[in-house]
Image (cartoon, rainbow, N blue to C red; front, side):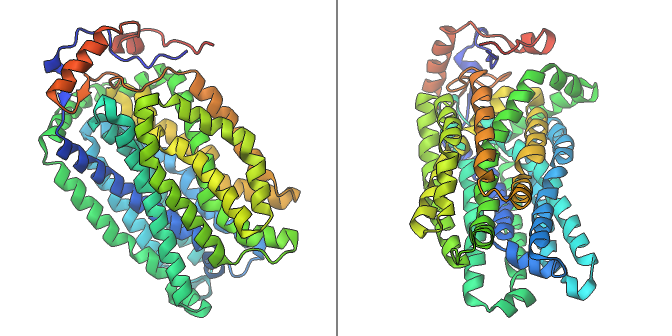
Amino acid sequence: MLSMHVDDDKDWKASDCTVTEPSTIRRAISAASIGNVAEWYDFGVYAFFEPTIQKVFFSNLSHTMGEIATFGLFAVAFLIRPLGGMFFGPLADRIGRNKVLAATMILMAVGTFAIGCIPSQESIGIAAPLLLLVARLVQGFSTGGEYGSAMTFIAEYAPDRRRGYLGSWLEFGTFTGYLLGAIVVTLAGAALTEEQLLDWGWRLPFFLALPLGLVGVYMRSQLAETPAFAALEQEAEDREKQARAGQTARDILVLWPYVLVCMGLALAWNVPNYMLTSYMPTYVTQTLPMMQQTGGLSPTASQVLQLVVMLLALLSIPFIGRLSDRFGRKPFVLIGSIGLVVLALPMILLIRSQSETAVFLGLLIMGLLLICFSATMPSTLPALFPTNVRASGLSISFNVSVSLFAGTTSVVVGSLVAYTGDLNWPAYYLMIAGVIGVVSILVIREPNGTSMWGSPPAAASEQEAHELVQSYDQNQDMGTLDDALRGPVPAPAA
């Protein structure tokens, strides 16, 4: 079993603990989460506007080829995410998390706003989808540095005993952004005619990304003035000297078992994530009616069902995050992973029935399984890496996994369904992700309630600091940071 290498064998004193005021923690959570709101606002708009985007940028292609091309442009942003992670992750370890988060926020807002400025294919021909490709690449590059740095940022601010709950608010921002995008698209579709949408209406939701980004940059710049982040910046200056000496790349290579586990957990988390948020809207309103020769659900009915499911998931995330601080992360990740294996086919069969009630139940099951990951992963994945390479290791591992296996869910599953004619491919894909999730979570130790690897215990009060030191004194069977970076990394064991 992989040890999380918490430094429990050190002779911690209460004075060594990091004590952060609750008000500072709340500001940190808000500043980090706003980036996810902006990022997933774009994904919500793109996913729900897929039929409209297809008509605007691929009007000369058949329906099937246009759908694949539109999903391909959605997926291409994920192909560049590892490059963003490789650039921004080490940068966050060198100059501090907050500066990187501000930069990625600006890039994401500019990329999304630029999409709304692109002329249609009828106006400028092939240049239109090419410009859309460039904008998506900018978004993908920024996202590659955004999410890993945001997870690191929150995890390092959070007290050890509340890291699950506070980390879950990062995903609360994710679902909020997606819901916001979906609501804007739904309102635009209800208020405008088809001609108005195709002419200019589809641009408006993308224009809203710019003010969202400005709000996020402001919040993050304000947080940089707090004493807590000043301490983190000082630590970052120390880590920069190590990074310049080539330590970062070597340390990440030494930690290859944790890189693989991080990739496996990211895959199990994000395949149902993108299946629900990016593929299901098109699967329900276009793929099923066309291949089953039925009327299917109207786009409005599908959007309403999706919004209700996402709202229920949104409200459940902090609750599950709080429970994970009490019962641990692993039980919830196992529930989500095993649920994908067992329930994937039933949920897809429910969705295939095209009954509004059955479709809602199928989407709801998928959403509830998703939040088992969404509520626990932001506090689980950062614990896999030590402080000096946490943003680097997390950003690279997470983005490589999402790029290769999760972010491409829509285009891969859509292509498999079109090629084979088998409408159950979404279920097969979810089942594979579930198996990988089970294996990945079983090879690590429970991270709940322990200090971050390479960092002193973190508490919300002086009293809690004394309690943490006493509890760590009773648990001295785990490796140290030096064991991990200078000695061999333990291999997975049953």
